[in-house]
Amino acid sequence: MQTGSGLFVGNIKGTKEKPFIIAREELLNGDVLRIGYEDEPWHGKSRVRRFVPKKGRLFLKSLSKKRPAQGTPVFLTDRRAKTLEKMLTALEGELNTISKQRVDASNFSARLPQRTRKRYLAFELKVYRKIGNKKLRGRTGIWLPIKNPARIPGSLVSKLWWWLPPVIWPEDETKIKGVVDFVLKKGGRNFVLNTPWQIAFFTGVKGLNLWAGPFCNIANPLAVGSLVSLGFNGVIVSPELGREDYLLLPKYCPLPVGIVTAGNWPLCVSRALAENMKTGQSFTSPKGEQAWVRQYGSDYWMFPNWELDIRAKQDLLQQADYSLWVHLIEPLPRGVKLKKRPGLWNWDINLL
Image 1 (spheres, helix red, strand yellow):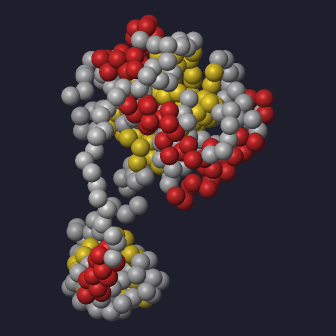
Image 2 (cartoon, rainbow, N blue to C red):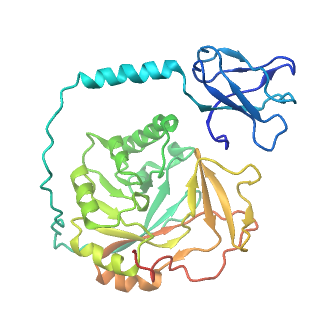
Image 3 (cartoon, rainbow, N blue to C red):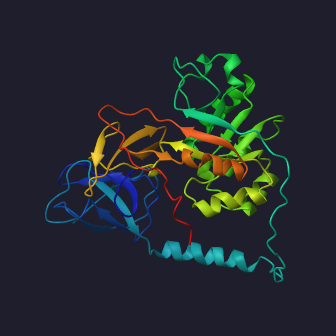
């Protein structure tokens, strides 16, 4: 979460005369540490003179003329110790013991996958952050994780399309897996995965309808062919393609194809947030563009105050054989007003 360059290893503790850190990482003799940020009066460097184990105490000397304040962050910025050289030499020795294998020239040639001639009935899917007391009409999706999945009626679980987040950090994986298992146990069968590896959550489970979501950034039929081999049943293409690519892609796709036609598409999804930025509030860029940030799980989603909207192209897309129209719906923070402007995104801009 720190914004400084280098690896964060601890905060300043102790007194002004004897500042120290409790090392979050193992430190080696010769490591270079950076104290604080450049605009702080105590900013400076300090070299580690002895081995410090993880959670060990390291006293810092001769940092600068002014002693650092309590809580000042310390970063590991350089490692040129003899200990590291020995480690690398040992690894190089291990590498030399591994027998070399002959690698012949590749004879791979790209071939477009065979498309099935089956046509699919088109339908719309509205995706929400929470259901609440909404009267649901048609097919509905909901983002994971949700706070109380047990409150959703069992009869609804099997009908909903459960959307997995585009980023699942290692510390959140167990939680997400628990929610997925709960939904499966209650009869959930429709899932949208926003990273291909998430299919590992469903290993050994049969009879599911698994789609690759728009955050998988699918942009060509060869990628769709790979998804077939992983066990996907459909694909929602990247919403950042141009007209030509959109209309050509389904022609060679071996899976049914969906597309985001309307809704709030994020400018970015990030794990870090600027210190002076608050979630749920509108902010304005130097160019006068407004946006807002929401936190979902460990990530911050930044949205512009205008929607993606290519619904006017829906007939053309249906002729190209798209069968799923996705509408992403975000709860607007107070004070945020959506700007009325074309939401064609890259429709008129072809990829280079």
